[in-house]
Length: 387
Image (tube, rainbow, N blue to C red; front, side, top):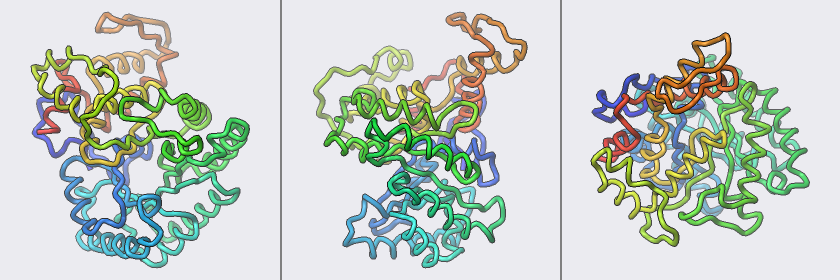
C-alpha cells in the first residue's frame, strides 16, 4: 500500500510516500494508518466496498462487527464478513490491499471468529480492533491469549496485530482514570510488539455524560473529553516509549447546516487559486474536521477514525509533511551536538535537543505520506485528491 498512489501527483512531492507492507517497520505501519475508515459488517457487498475505497485512497479499513451492527443482525454480518475475507484471500495481493482489520465484540467473540473463518481468510487481515479494552479486569489478557494461539504458527511477517480502543467509564471517570491507565500501560508495554496503535473511542466516552459534539465543535471543545485525550497521551503516547494514539472519530456526514462562523481561512485557498474548493468544504461542513485534525496533531495524536469515504482525502492531505516541516526536522536530526539555530524559513528557532523527538515523528510521517514540494500546500493535495 502506498498513499496517494491513485493520484497523478508526481509534481506534488519533493519526496513521495514509501510503500508500506506487512514487512515494514511497525512504527511506520502505525503512522501510515492515516484515516482509518470503519465499514459496518452488515453491508451487502463488503468486497466491493474494500476494493472501491482502496482504489480511492483508503489505506486502512475496519470491518466492524460491534456497535455498527445490531445484535439481531450479527449472525448475518458475521457470514458476510467471512465470505468477504475468503473472497479477498482468493486473489489477495498485498500491493492492492489496505491495512485491513476486524472489529470484534469481546475476547470470546474473537476466538469464535478465528475458529470459524480459518487461517486462509484471516491472512488478508493486518489484525483486530478490540473495543472496550479496559472494560473488564482480564479482558486485555484474554484478547492476547487468543492472539498468541493465532500467531503461534504464522511467520513473523504475517503476524496479526491489535488496536485496543479505550472507551469505558473507568477511563472517563476522573477517580478511576489514573489507575486504569497505569494498568493499561503495564499490559500494553509488556505486549509492545503486538500493539499497532491505541485508539480513543470518543463516542462511547462522551456517552458516559450523555454528550455528543456537533460538526461545529471539535473534541477539544468538549472539556471532559479533552481531558481524557490529554491523559491518554500523557500515559500511553510518550515520545520515547509510547504508542501511536489515533485521533477520535469524526462521525459527521457532509452537511450544510452550521451555527458558528468558519475558522477555515481563505488565504491558503486564494494562494492556490481554488476558492471554489474552500466553498465546497464549507458547504459540506468539513472545516470542523480539518480543524480537529490539526488539533489532534498538536495534542500528540496521529491519524483518525472516520466513517465516510469523503473524510479520507481530507485527513491524508493534512498528513503530508510540508517542505518547511521537513527542512526543520532534517536540520534538527543532523545536529547531534545540540544548540539552537534559525529555521531555513527564517520564521522560528530550532532547538536541537528539545525538538529531537518531534523531528523523529515528522520524518516518520514523511515516509508514510510524503514531503510536499516547496510551493505545494495541503490545498493542492486535497484538490487533486477530490477530483
